[in-house]
Image (tube, rainbow, N blue to C red; front, side, top):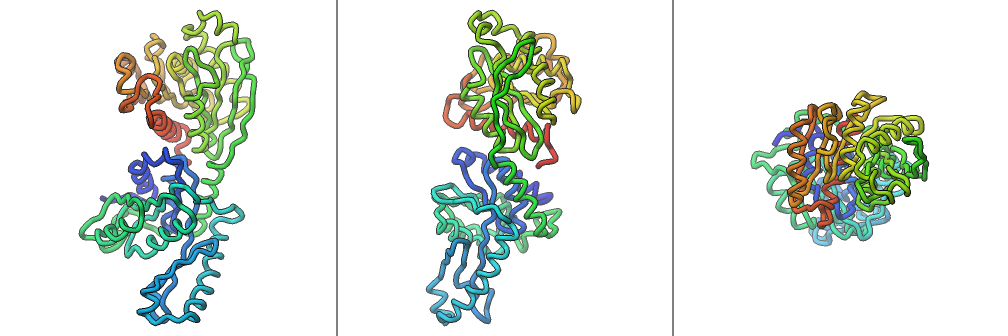
Length: 430
């Protein structure tokens, strides 16, 4: 398996690690080359990113032979067997450790700046490197992560020699290795571009990830649409600069727990969100407006215009059930031009068929997400996709029914929606 570069390796590794997103993991990159790979893993999983700074303690006069390792917060791991066989005395241990502690502190400050270390206690920790040669650093990182309280340690690398992969399986709780070629001689031979990763790049990626995973400004708002003021919740965009408007289905509102769960996953990836009520309480009580797709679409269009005044940037729409039809009609009405249109649409268990003749006018890239057990709606989505004349994809979520209440299915929706919006609204952030 050949990787184009570290970004390509990170995206492919993230796909293999996808199921771990449900465990709320922390992703740690081994500096320097592991950080660009880890950046893409963290982004795809919606997880915080940090570095794990470890230093090997080398036997004096034979520094390539490690008798232990140190990590931040005073963590020290010593191999008593190697110490005994190499004849390393207490004075030697103290001298080597003092020198390595100074370098460890310097590198941690340089990479992380003033940000605190992400706590690992009780967490699933994914350790990422760009590849493994001997495995010595990876072994030390596993030990340090455990000593810092990690509950479950996953070592994830694009490539490693078979011998190292076998040895590392015994040290980590899980090893995810995309390729273990028999003819392995060096990590770089499995990349088309394996240029050095400068410290400045590591610092920049960590800063971007911190902005993305940090708390975003959220506020209650009144959205002016269709001549009425509709209550909503606006979470401003992070470093992607892009924002997604949610169009809920019939019988739901801005308080929909499913939409809020998806919105939180988008927020963790640096996407802003707006969840707002499409109808007034009186209109909801009357009932006849619930399936008035044209009215709902018109209010979505008004909401996007209002939003551009308050949070300019690329816009997408996430629609559920009848809200998906409104989202597609709105996309047809405003087009897909940057700055004025809707840049991408995602439908969850949607009824795109209710968009009627406007389906053929949609130019916004559209992702249709349907549960495999939602057979009637699945067939309606297949027919609707045939009428679309834009980039589109129909993804079937295994085991899911219409409301995606089955374990893991809503997380799958969030992951796929997040990737679709980032690819189409903010491709430069990847």
